[in-house]
Length: 387
Image (cartoon, rainbow, N blue to C red):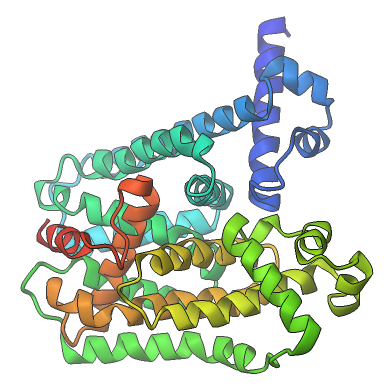
């Protein structure tokens, strides 16, 4: 084997290991040391082959872009002999693409979600977000470029998929969730002016209730904490809101709270207990903030933390009820504002679908996106609904 082919093989092994570590541990905990352990090679070799952590992240995103483009080309081959597509066919295709994210593509789905959401917190990741979005959007544009009837749907599909993808990975094995996703997709792609049937809306609400039931039971089972533990939980929640769910550590919280480490470990026995204590406090705050639909800052926090909870739930299933419930509530909170703008009055599925598309836009475009609660979001909703 030549030195060139050996170097290529080593690089591929490093990138595969890096993608696995990023999906398993999250971007906050991502390090050359963990990648070296995963790849069974030295940190020095990774530095020689690729560079520092920033260079490795850049290489990982470049690999994800290659994977996106390859999948796009495979789908185009699948569709090349198809004479036309209607909206029902487009719905089937989008659902299948999301199913593939649950199965063979789950590492890519998590890596993409990590880059998108952490770019909100770390400006250094902004160029990676921009590059990833160009290929992510290009996937759908390339898929449907030969079908005039589908081209106008590309933006709303691309935005919706960004919000949807991580939840498909988290909940894709649930029958109720897959049915709910299909109902949402149908509503997203329904032509403007074509009202959904009341039975379809009733079915959608039934599925929401089915999915919310177990989550609600888990949330109601959590006892309210008081005293010193409640004060510490508020400190944890403050740190989570500022730095993200994954950033929490005992030492960090003890320092910010001004208490001995032993006091903190007395109330929160493990790191998981620490995280759960902060998440429960954040959840109470987020429910309160959802009662203020004009609060753009609260909307941004809900956007970030709902996705971070979903990513966290992939690593700790105790966070799953919080991710499910906050995702449901963020759409319910703006239904009265969203529905009239997207022909969705009396149609919960359609208002939820376009809320997801708008959130996906905010994630994809960063500070340029219009999230629920911003002054410009009604205009963007109308534009998406007219595509």
